[in-house]
Length: 631
Image (cartoon, rainbow, N blue to C red; front, side):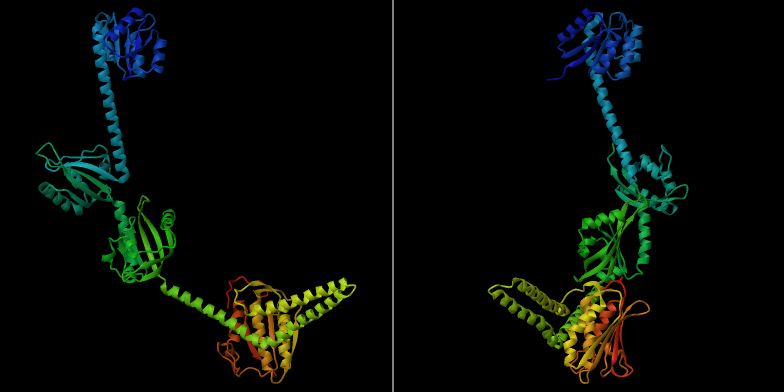
């Protein structure tokens, strides 16, 4: 069902209003009438009622038709307005039409009213459609102009035979002309760079003959000497005039791109001097530059690599998702990390890759500069260093384990004492509990002593086990005097069996130091065992001294009265595999020196003035600040 025609009727005569309504009904119109009589009612209807057409009497007691017409034109300029009056003269009617009325109908000729309304509504509809089309065209032209401005691309039409040219505002701007400038062939030639004008004229002559699409790049020179690079694309278009050859084309200002390419080429010439593999790819990963370093590293020549997709060519394996890498590159302009690539011979290699985002003068990303360094040798060296570190750690552990045989008797003696004591106390405890009147108090006391003896045996076992267990260094504050006492107790039985006494001189108040307890125990045990073995045929005294140096380091010395050092070999005894023992491996002193050096100290030896030798080592007197590693 169609919507009714909405009519605003300005009429103070009820009879005339009914007559108009009956006429419209008789003619079969589907309508709704809003009748008003005063200025206030008329203005209220204009502001609040939907209206398709206005019918107005010319003369009212308190209002007049011309005033109503002016009010309607101000608020609804496109609304059909028809005077329906019995007093409208010809001059007044003509004046009303000039002001903006659509038509006038005398009440004595109401038969004209419906045809006049139909014509007015039809013309209003046509005007509305025309306005919509014009508005759509205007918006389309604005959109096209804005798109051309943003993309630095203008459009043009060119009749090759007549030389007539039409161009867009953006094309006018690219040529550096004032808005509204009429383009001509002579103007285009004048704005072309002098070195390119001959080529332009040849292209014009060729196009007038061949009449085929063309694409070209050339330079423009502005009146102020500024040079622009443009890319022109055009193709022939259909024309109603058989005497014309019309071309439609687009011209793009590519100055920024050309300058970026020139900059990259200058960089490329310098980059060919480096040994790094360097290439450039656009945002579609298409390679545009490939230096000699890349040729050498990957095996493809520049001609083979250019135009290829970088990812398809090198088959990279990234350390993180590519989306994260791309996001970081766009945000910061840089990215670096280790990437695995595939060479032309299908070999895989690891490179240290550094990416740099290249932008044009407007800041738009245009390409990525990639610099890759082969780190395969470095990776191999790192693995070799790690293997050597592990080998040293294993040798240190083997050295500790080899000491266990020499300590077996001492360990048996130390562990046997608390276990035997615990067993005797257990028997006594049993007797006190088996009496007719159990002595619970005595039994409880002895049970507590048993616990102490067992825990002592366990502590001895744990202390010895830590010496040869495979574990990472544990850095902590240690009391060097406490460690000397532990090693003295542990080695006392071994010393007695070799007719050696152990004497200690421990300085009071020396500070703690940060060290790995087990490694320091290993060094001290190694030096003390060496001293005991040096005196096993003659007996003697082993002296262990703790002190402080003038620069506040801890100084520990182990002196014996044994066979002494080999002549002129005070330093060689610390070389790996150097030994004076028939069954020695020559690793103990070498490992000990490495341990002390890793702690920031120094280990050395010197002969005594009489018999024997003294080994000394230092440790920092406070927590170390440098990095530490296992030996």
